Length: 335
Image (tube, rainbow, N blue to C red):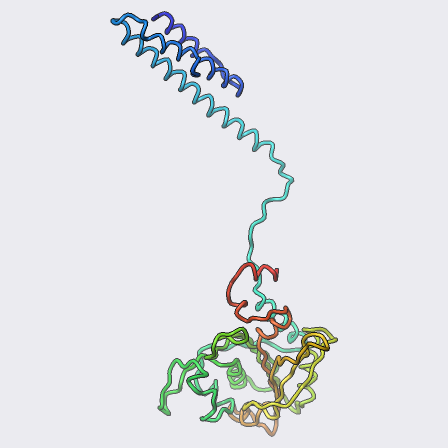
């Protein structure tokens, strides 16, 4: 029996395994239930009692030797096959797509609005979102009892009754940037002021607690209402196309006189409706005086529009909340 196990050990050592077929043949010959190692294990009971322990130990060593050789050969073959697969990859095939970010529909709309006014000769100005009462209300001709000053309409950061300490608010419009611009620069001025604004409003399909505005200001000598109208008409035609149907109607704002609002017709002739897209007017003389500009020498116009409203009309969105949900299923539609 000892000679048999020694011979089988030498045989196992000498076997060459270089293909999956040779690996399977090795397993069947030595490690399967009908293999040679299993056959030796079945003969342990027929060995003399004094030799049985030594024989069994040698057979177990044979089994371990065959198992280790099988495992090593299997791992080597798998590694070689992986290398071959990688080497035969077609490097001319396009790479797998990588998800990338994209401009939000509000950013796309704002860029479109900026582009229109760049072409009309306007620059871009910016200002703080945390404003004092003077820039947000007083300089814009809001009387002390105006509803916009009420706590129910405005997010007050600091509210006092002191004449020496100014109230602080999250700006309710981007018009304060007009005041800062007129205080810093002398006319003529032609600029737009895009940015976020805040209103203490209930969140619904048509209103949100924050939104984006674009204010516009033009100050020079002999600026007329006709120039304002031409500017607004060019704007809506460049955004919605030359065939857009619009109307201009009287309105009221504390900081302009006269004031107006502009509507566009949305939908077909039978089921469509008028939708307001912006407010505008000639800058009120009191606003000019508050920043040290002589209203007898200079005049001008101002306008303001909500970016969300422009975007919703342009893309056909019926719920403003969709613009703030960050749902990729919605945002991917604007790639």
